Length: 106
Image 1: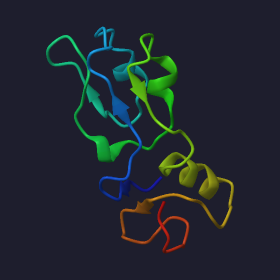
Image 2: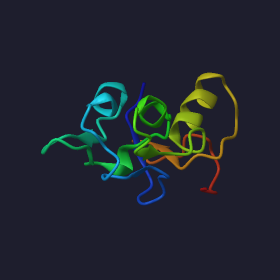
Image 3: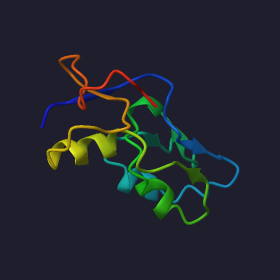
């Protein structure tokens, strides 16, 4: 699969660092290496790499992470794999062509 890049500052991912207990589950389940735990608590190190799959939020035992799954690049990847022509994604293929062929974003 082609490497995907994302439009800056559109991701719905949020982390409440006060709720984080440092368990590291977000590191384990995130397919994009968005998180790190440098000092015992999670930090978002690459927000724009988030594909909004929702794995981090679903697996966070303290509900410190929120994200609206299905609105970002994960949807575009799934739709493209299924041969669908449109998506509400902000995802682009590394060549600079939009994955879903539309010029709208979010």
